[in-house]
Amino acid sequence: MFVGVGLLEHSPLNITMVKVFATAVVMVWNFASRNRWLDAN
Image (cartoon, rainbow, N blue to C red; front, top):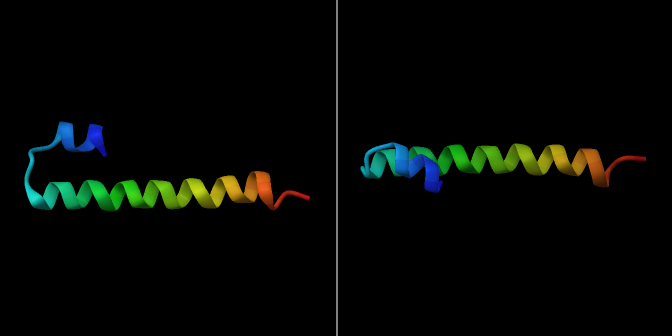
């Protein structure tokens, strides 16, 4: 989020878009890492 907000203007819409993007990245990372390391048989 620090990088995303730093690259864009500090408008509320841009900050919200960065938050949504960061949430999506973390969701994908958590899903992939769980499948890779915790659910592996």
